[in-house]
Length: 354
Picture 1: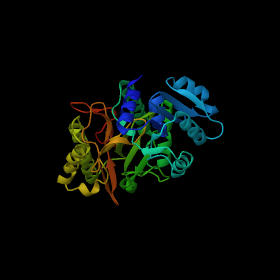
Picture 2 (picture 1 turned 90 degrees about the horizontal axis):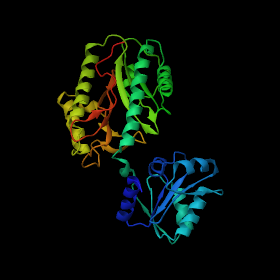
Picture 3 (picture 1 turned 30 degrees about the vertical axis):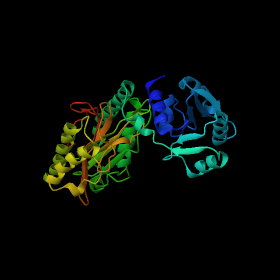
Picture 4 (picture 1 turned 90 degrees about the vertical axis):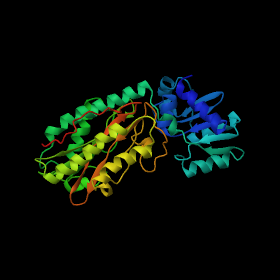
């Protein structure tokens, strides 16, 4: 049995349930190896079942070798009810943060004698193994190489949409399965929008352009942001850029095993507070990256992570967002170690003036 399943069974014991019903797609992937959708895992102490439909039977047999395949033909949740009845399990852990109210109500109605307990399984994915780290490294390399290719294309008059489309095209040509999320291209005044996904706005000379993007490799994500200037930067643009760069580089110094998510966020936030710009830093310092682009652990004021562990992967992404001016964000995907953090994204961070 692999380490992921061992950890899952330890969690099952700690939660005092007879079985887990796993419905979140990234968790189905993580624990079984199955990369399709419309599937659930039903895992008890003496059985491991993957329930899916006929479209995925061949794929499931190949990818989920440690699981018994159960094919449904009359509805996924009807088959789930049948399998729970067969199992005799009386207390089942389910992913309450992702299951719909309708599905939960159906299970309660059909299985009146079964107790359902909401459990959180995402935290079991926080520490990455060697294969996961290599997949994320590959995704980071694809994003870095695509960034190099996009720079000559960014000129006054090109639309944000075009930059995003070309960037995603380059990532696909370089081996990305898909963009990790909707690509952000926010130019000029739109740079004050932290999630300013690309629009038909034309990029103008003298504007800062924030580009936030990521590739995927074997389902694992990368996340990188760079801010460039189209033409020569003004003194004010350079000042804001250097403040963010200083904070981002400081983040790489303070991100390390043993520190809490809140502690790391506060340390970097204080850097911008001391410069008088804290109110323009409107989000947390970072988040976990893996099968999902945003996952645990978080580096923020609200973080629940009491202590980072080696081989966690997080982002380091301070930003300043100023209305009627624009914004700057600089972000790396970062590997946590017991010493200095390793930035897995390596595109230049000195201000690029095109």
